[in-house]
Image (cartoon, rainbow, N blue to C red; front, side):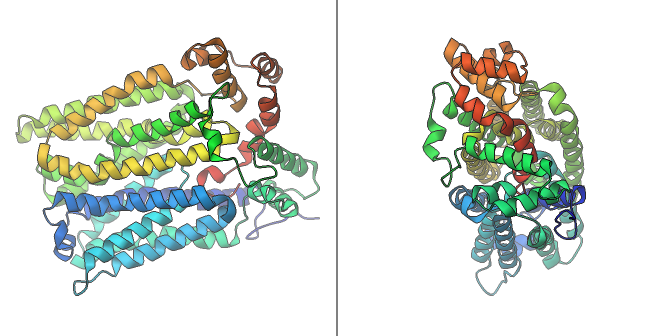
Length: 511
């Protein structure tokens, strides 16, 4: 009997197709982050949406309202994602995004164009919020594409200069929606819903094996162990209140570590640079709109390069060191920017431009991927989905705040904007140093033991992670008994190393 297939694919080709479609979702998110950068101050855009012309508050609101839509979408997935399943959630998100884009690009002068554009942008945000549970590194490439499309479109007709970059989002959304029509559902979701035969079929197809193959049955059992460990067995999901528990498992502390990483990513100033790089160059460094767009495109090339670098150094360097070094790089970059803007001369402003480039390089190599990776590693299987959802909501909320206030700050306090972000980044250092345990090369069971050790021995969790040696399976069992975690670790053991490895749902796709 031949292995089952989807889209005529099975085994590695099917897994690659799933990854390609999922990656398109990440690129789409990055594109959405960058697309307004070259549009919000473009003459053709301001002439149609007159309230945005020279009005930093309205520019911030029109750009940031997208994040509120994303927040609503994320809350919807937190509430109904288990019911919908991965395929339907992705297809719904892509379809809603397409609707939002159509509403935006059909805005006309003889109606109420600004209200229509804001509604469309909010709807687009809702669609993206439904899609995103992100692996961070690929986002930079979407932002890179957005900046260069903005730059190219600026040479077109007034209507094309802003309508085409926004409409181009539909290309990515169509790939997601059409791809999901023929791709399989998550086997974890199917098995959670007790649709065992369908789950076996998907596992077999992804592995390129027959349904009754021993490996297929083993992987099915591993996922079932993961489901039981996560509290899904026999009910719809882990209750939200489980995230707020303490004791040896320290669920609340671990959730807050993930939430705080997303909070710090946003208030550290990343989207002040990504969303408004051309505005920063125009208003702070006094470059022309065309040169600002061009330099923005170059900056995004640097962003993408350093985001790629993060893939190769994140395991070697470790999470804590990368968090700390990235924060130092961001802080010093902002110091360079504000100090070079104080004199108010063209020559000194060139140093500020260098600071913006070094900031995005530091961010791309560290704070871009880490806040998406760390919550998934620090939280146990039982509370991971809920904790990750809360982390994502934190991201959208503070993303909105920073995108909303940045143009207002630039208009009113000028170089003080960059002083503010320098001070904020400096404040991150003690928080990371004293409260963020290292998770690199640790299994989920070892992370459980780190927090149990800290709780039982009444020591800091950073110290507990440093003192806990890397353990074999037998040593994990022995330590689990020593700290009173036998039940939790016993339920999660196989699921931690193998079941989670099978999941592709971290990318919002099929697992």
